[in-house]
Amino acid sequence: MLHVGTLGLTLEPMASALEAVVEELSGQALVMVDPNVRPWVIGDADAYRRRLRRVLERSDVVKVSEDDLAWLEPERSATDAARMLLQAGPRVVLLTRGADGVQVVTGAGDVSVPAPEVEVVDTIGAGDAFGGGFLAWWRGQGLGREQLDDQAAVVEGATFGALVAARTVGRAGASPPFLHEVTPATDVADAWRTPVGDDL
Image (tube, rainbow, N blue to C red; front, side, top):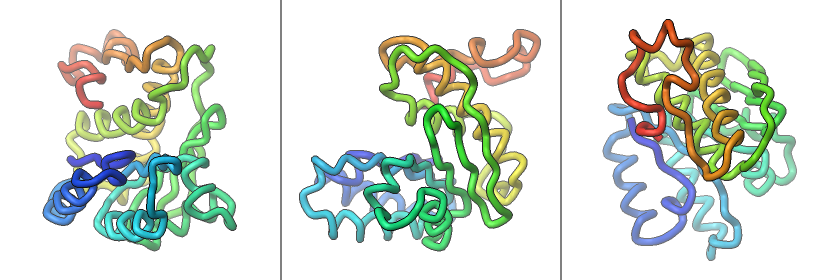
């Protein structure tokens, strides 16, 4: 698995290096991209969009927020923009909507995943926690890029990711939960042995 995004796709020489890694691993490893757009850091918006387009063409999963899409596709609704991303190459788009949950967008259609109720303390790291939770669940189930066409599995992974994000925003410090905090005690013995935080 490979996860790239945020400043990694913005700042040189890191951006070029990560693009090369994506190109090398595309089609072999599951590649997940989280643009996590930071407009105030992007010096050349056109160049950034071109690089992102190239990376998306080689990705399998895109995790994107409503804020990201408002910058990338300001003339479209978040839902329409998310569907457009599918045409760029990825097989799954995970549109995060904060307290409104997650919209799973695939070629088979859209599925809404509600956000668990939580008293929000600190929203920093929520998106990373969601993406890490999704990948940790996917890996924990022994799934790979070949199984991304299983929409039910993608929804279940997104549901787990939403739970990880909820636990993260429920306390200060962008501190993701350990496995025992998001898994029923009876299931922990048969689950992965590492903290969810180690996969983020």
